[in-house]
Length: 455
Image (cartoon, rainbow, N blue to C red; front, side):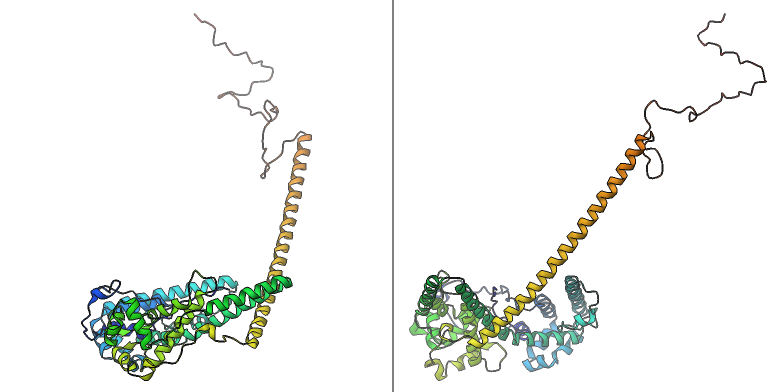
């Protein structure tokens, strides 16, 4: 099993709030002292993929709504609760006709895409009894009962679906990571069973040595602490650690200049800490574990700093966090290698589940093999019947040839006429034009030769 890590993404509320484009507090920064290239003003920053199966539809709807002046003004004055409650969705009735038409087109395209997915699912299981409506109900980000027009209910459903899905996104990722770790351990133990005692002991020693080597790393600062941020300030930004200023730090790392630190901008702050523990060149360092560590760090900072739980950190929230005792005197941070990720009971349950799945797959494979053999048997039988019929036809044609009759075609016609063989009775009779029957006893005179010369 290969677990593909995907960075946690913004929910619909966050993406919608980004449309506000609130101005950050103006701060004078000497950009010449900062390493790397800054964000170019006016340049469009691409938002990362949300990881949702309807991500493209979500983005397109937001882009279209952003073009309507009225809706944008309402958005600027709306708070998170108004967006969540669906109050903002009712403003859709007041947007321009062009915007509504474009939203209708987007919805029809999305419905068509979902129907294609359903058809693919039906084809894969070869079950014509699947209920289309029942399958459509699983797509909760739009009103499938009205497939033609985009209504306020559709916007409300899109907001609620994306909010709910992304609130559970991190939880799902943690569960997948846990399965990934248990699968690693399961495969390691299964491999050890295939070795003799000497090789097994050697592998066990190597495993313990790699664990020890991975755990031998510099101290990891508590995410979001002063020490951690100052290290970024000095090593990543190239600024004097003695001149560390939280407000300036916030402005520097608000990459898209929208006045917030979003989840991706926060995760970027932990790169230096993660590099202390993980190196892609080292066999003992797992990059999947590194991304899980990054996720844990971001979640921790969000829980500590994000007061209103909108998954965005404002300048006010950030500055307030720097005034807490935990910012100056944080607890030590435990990395993944210092924690027990699963118990033996959980591993046994996981292995039991894998064994059950393997049995089911084995049974399916056996059934498929039987079906293949039956199809092959039927094929061989048909081939034998075909050859037998061809042999009978061949024998019949040979028999006809031996009797002097050429083989006949499907309609009874002769397939060929032997050259020079014409039966007299079959020869056509063409009496001369104008000839009349002769009287009895009259002998027909021979025809005059055309080459005779007449005076």
